[in-house]
Amino acid sequence: MLESSYDALYSTNTFDHPSPESRSNSSSFLPGIVRVDILPSSGWYLYAFRKERIVEETWAGKPEKVIRYDSQNDVSFASPRTSFEAWIETTKGKAEPWKNTELQFLKDISRIVQHSIAQRGGEIEELNKELIRSNNALETFGYTLTHDLKNPLTSIQLSAQMFLRKKEMSDDLKLKLAENIIESSKLINDMMDKVYKMSQVSNVEFDFELIDPQPKILSIAENSKYQYEVLNLQFELGDCIPVWGERTLVYQLFLNIVGNAIKYSSKSSSPKVEVYSESIETSTVYYIKDNGIGMDLTDNSNIFEIFKRMPNTEGFEGSGIGLSIVKRIADKLHAKISVESKLNLGTIFRIEFQKNIE
Image 1 (cartoon, one colour):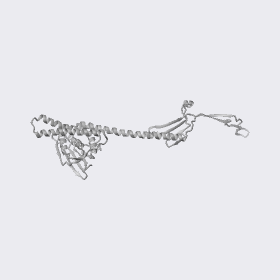
Image 2 (cartoon, one colour):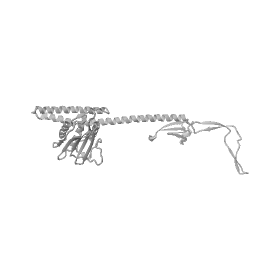
Image 3 (cartoon, one colour):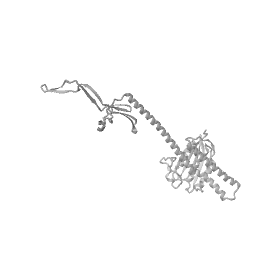
């Protein structure tokens, strides 16, 4: 039984060990025990032990009483001690009592250990965050390599094929094809540079500027028609209001959403994609609307979750990473993104860009 306790510290100097072997072996019998809580929920405690202290005490005569019985009076009584010779008593099963200073010292040690554990736990948490950030950066880097680069590469390929197939072409057409190759090559370089920077540090400062996305959207739509073999696509581009953002990230944002709209409409009998914008108070809102396979959002699925693919996307290429990258890019651009969709009827993405971001 533990004799004393305060806060998370318990102590005794008379612990009775259940093992007879320990009690019989004075070198292993430890009746003095202190237990200090460190992390009780994890089973972490600090223990201190103290050996048995055998004490010999000298008494003036053996301290015992002899009970005598008086049959005549029917009474029992203790007879007086008849000898006062020195008598030695040996006390076992106890340890030196714990002093308050010793108990306080053990409490201080436990607090130091708790502080160290908490500090190390914080370091581990930061390392876990860094690991998550690194994994996200790796996913972004990998997705850019496997998906986002396909569009400018398709543009380069188409331009090169035109050079090979059309021996006779005007200087204006040659100039346009050459410009397409140069622009696409520069775009690939810029995209890789931005992704590399994001993979190296947790926070990248981007240079925001007013961007007219119309030329890029038209280029994305034209290249996606060939990439997803939707040559009968009806693409309608409405009013394109300039937006504040970083040029490469804005391109990647529209590349993924417009590209997805064309991809998931490619099996419709009359595939149609619309892109238009409007100005509302402090924001510029873009809408990307398609008549593709749509999504069932009744179960409140988070379509921006990584590796999240809807059940009806089988038969379409993809890894489920694209929209999670879109969400991260939108966050970098301080833009809000939302979606409305109905199964087999199509999808509308809404991107709200802030105005005048400094």
